[in-house]
Length: 495
Image (spheres, rainbow, N blue to C red):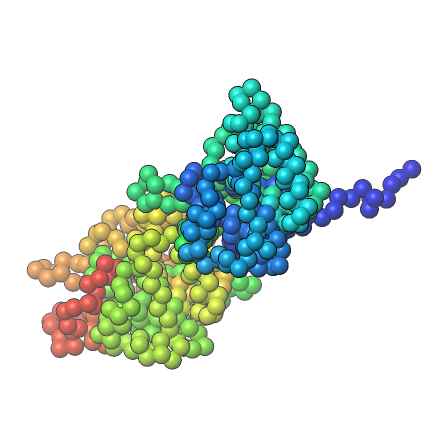
């Protein structure tokens, strides 16, 4: 006798939004309805904020939450802290989010009375989410002999209530216990918040150790606490790999520098990545500005900067004959500046990708990306991040130029391309050369994707009309009247 498969099939898991889209992405689609979760972390990591964000996200959908605690902190004090956060709405309390303390019940009457109180509140409030904070007071008040047993019984009872009422339980705890502890075995999900203040660049990380019912994005994902609450930034390289463009392009994009287009055999290959490398003051930013100058409203250009403020960048562009301000006014170009402090590496990646997605940008310049990201990650992580970022930008149809500062003034015997190794398709090296008593500027192409190019170095000058490349045999080293004045051109940190 055979049975119908439909008789034994398990009901499909349903999920709901946590209020943090990026956390839902890490969890593989959100929190499981009827599941139980542990949010663990040291004091000050944002556990209470995260738990409340989940409750207020449910309230925004018209669903109720019950927030119970065994801690001594008063709710008036909690509200005073939460009121500075954008998601907090006192009008949702108590109709949609009901807060209550169960400490007195546990201390005076024991665990059975606590469980009875929880059942009463669930039947009365009909919550979709139950947040329970301070569960380890159960073990402490039960004494050393029965603490673990009572805690395990409590967790099993909660899990049964969650399944019976299709209610998701969130357990909030400071405790850092062994993964074999009963709470981790019972829970369907385990989220840890970590504050790493000991490193040279203090940072916060979120780790999902466990999530039943589907794949998760593994690893340490950065987050920050802001007016919005917790803002989570999934590791860029953990996200699904984007689809490559269906057809390889054979088109070339003008670099904005005629001499460079001649050297490359017609311009920069479309949908490729180019590294412009050189020491400080060699003109790397100038090359990026030239590339941006050919942008149009139909093929937008984006300039991502890390050191120079937009006002200075506009002056620099004007000094070499590029009306960047006009391009921005006509919707052909946009400057996005990342502040040098308090920027997270995955925030950079997410912002850049969203800007390109939203604008459909075809020309993208990163001025000083490596230098900005180097303090934020070790070399292994940085290489993985850059690869993931570049893959996504190219898959979106962008052609990307990166500027990268190298310490050698003259043509290096060994080019420490480091994190760019195997990443870029084209490499332009700007360097210096000693010609008798004079130091001259030189530009050398090291590679161009899938094509031949002019391997010979060219002399170049930065003039009021921009960067001018000249074959060495035609180079006249005498001073010219069109040289750009001393000042911002080519003097910034990024060249």
